[in-house]
Length: 249
Length: 246
Image 1 (cartoon, rainbow over the protein chains, first blue to last red):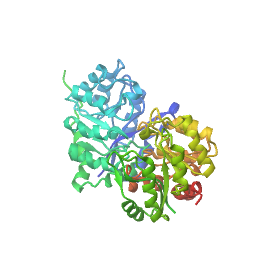
Image 2: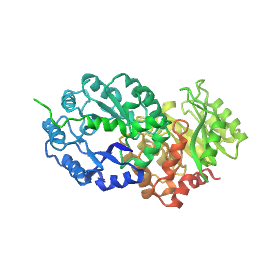
Image 3: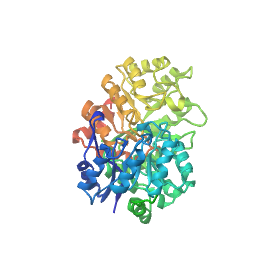
Image 4: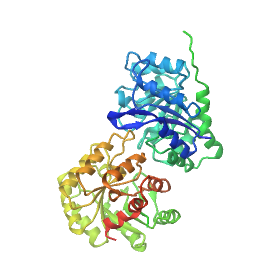
């Protein structure tokens, strides 16, 4: 079974990114993917934010196939309440942060506060990481060090040119990596060796990245069948099962 | 015919290496008939020597590999090196790596090399998308100065994993009909498909960037692209043959 831990649904006319849930569902079918975690391109700023509601509607429409992550701008005054609604009320399973889109340092206090809040739900925090400032693995791992109780997923494993740094950060037990977009099958093998097979998650970043091709990338990485099973579904299933939807206090 | 428009042979200063025999074996397995091959930047920094070594290898397998001359425009002898590469070694393309040789691709000192490329009808392959040095709009400036020279931007013209360079790459392709892209590492299929739709399959060439990128995986980007079969054939080999005058 394959669970895709990082995909998108959203309708952002101004950017020309029109990705209804039906698009990712069709690509999942093409790739033999049972379930996908979906998130928007927009950052929510408050409860009932249209971005969060779009994820909710998508999941409600395809409850067997889609699971939601909420994407939030931590600098917004309603960020904490938006997280509470998404995970507490809408049963979403994680928090997505894209520091480039909201222009915020990963180790800034607003982000750290939201990460601590997510950690109380035991919800993972998926960061976009890449080659640009605000999303460098060094910056994101700085946040992971400051909030060790939060599980931090390095989306895209740092992009094109940060593989050595990403491998180095396996030393931090709360850091996990996803396989999406990074163009090197060999990096998945190295990540499994460095992080252990329990801390590497299959992800496509579809629909932009073709899920079928992203699955093929994992197959080319030379993993054992047991490692593939963990990367393709076991690990993310374990993470989702651990998310609490109610916190005390 | 499948033609890989960008591979490297030899040994790089960074330890990466690829022997011609290994490359050819993999090409056989993947059904890749020919490739354009450039030298790595060697630890002993002598590109003249690297070009000559590569040419020696390519002469043995001339029916499979075509050599590109790697030139550092900072060297006062750059033009002589290129001339020697073309005239003595039979190299058929110019390869520029602004990141490893550290130069802005729009520098005027590149113009003599471009004039030679125009005179000899050599396509120019530029490692593109590198910040400060070879962003797509910087490559566009070079392409605008040399409209008769085909210039191929590596990696689709951008290497930002957020795709933030894609708009610039599109703008550059729209402005300069002599600009092309290779497909290595283009992590989003829609970037390939939309480029084909907007500018025609004639502007897109399969290039793997091996061994930095995995040739087995890179070829699939073109093989699974949602394009018409005749467009795929152009991308897989037709365009390379046309640009190299084969």
